[in-house]
Amino acid sequence: MTTNPPWSQLQEETHAPLRGFLRSVKKQKDLASQAILVYGSVARGEFLQGYSNINVLILLEQITQPVLQQWSAIHKQWAREKVVAPLFLTHSDLQQSSDVFPLEYLDIKECHVLLEGHDPFPELHVDATHLFRQCRQEVHANLLRVRQCYVEGLGKVEAIQTLLPLSLTALLPCLRGLYRLLDRPSNMKSPEVLDELNATLDVDPSVFLEAWRLKRGLSTPGKHELPKLLERYLTGLGQLVGKVDSMKHEERVQ
Image (cartoon, rainbow, N blue to C red; front, side, top):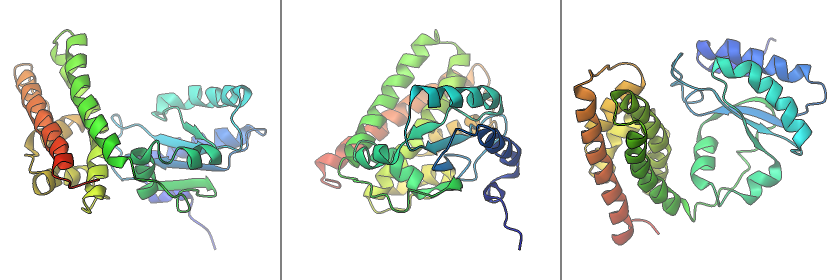
């Protein structure tokens, strides 16, 4: 009986680059990985060719400079196919940092696809003690970065076209993390995560959905509309920051 390759459950646009990436890995005979998996938009079925990156996590027995040098050659070949530099971890890294990166690890644990090796995430206990603190910090930092990036971009509309999708990409895992803390559904497609803002945090999701459409290439605001969109986005992000801060005062989370 023929077994379907692991990438067959992913969107067809990702099959060729992932197949090629794994083939390049296998050509390096001294490069033994314990697990290779994809996460992010690819695993969630939200990959959009020309816009999305392919996020890969590599689990290794040990990580040394020569090993990273070998991986750099593979990365050079596949970066043009939107396969970003992998996240390199050892089993020890995973175990010892689960309380440091609860937001990231819970997101990967919830949604990923194993391409090769033994999947470490079903067995991984993620300490969520500090999850709210990380979510709160990330939401605050997001607002500060948007302001800073707009100034760095000299106030040009091109800067807005770049910074809004980047901000939204960073915001979505934070929202999923907050929903987990509030016992709300978190393993949803991104538009559903944004829609949930109204019911869960009493924040109008409309401007975030506008930014989502911009990110996906479904909306192309003109040069006169983009500054207005940024203004609304900053207002919405500020309201979200306030709601997250109030969660602590209202003792909705520990």
